[in-house]
Image (tube, rainbow, N blue to C red; front, side, top):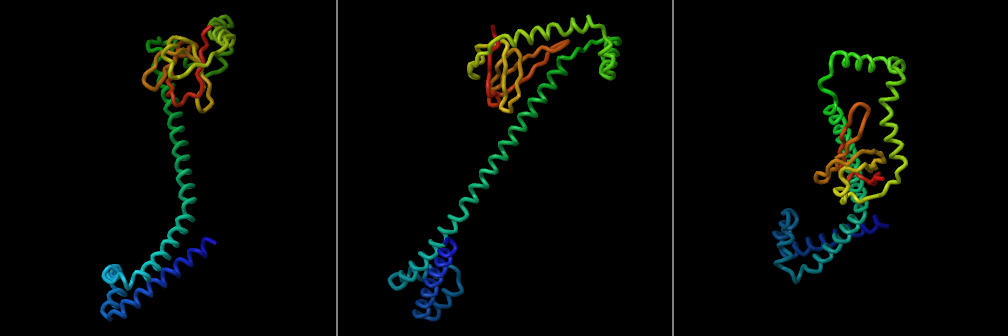
Length: 229
């Protein structure tokens, strides 16, 4: 149906244009040739002889308006779909970039908190432990228990606390408290809220043998919970 109306608009516009050309030749051969070969000369002719040409001009203009309106109606949904697809692709790109930034921040925090003055014996032991998983299993059970006890106790304490949901904009009131943060990517982390800088929240997480700091933007936080007793 739309194509039929567009074709009808083209036919009406062509009839009006031919009618206008006939009027120009009736006026004079010069006007006819000028209207036929010179761009936009027909507009000058219509303005100069409006009373004679207004009907033909309005017919031609009406056909063109019908054609243009139907053409726009056909391509408008395609344009809107293209814009929506572009917005989705941009949103996915921004989300991926934010996740990469968060990962980079975590790695930088681990490097910055790593022991800097490790002796040769500690360095060799760490290298041997990283290279050989069997060395870890052969370590004395007392040492493993001592190292993991604080972490296990902390995990049990955190699990026994009923979290309370707080607003991200009120996070400054909870600095120094243990928190559980759920990102928009559904990743859940726990740590102590250390600072709020602009739209970013800084958390500190205790690890075996040290700690790490990670940062999350407020726009990347889906849920923020306080684990304070």
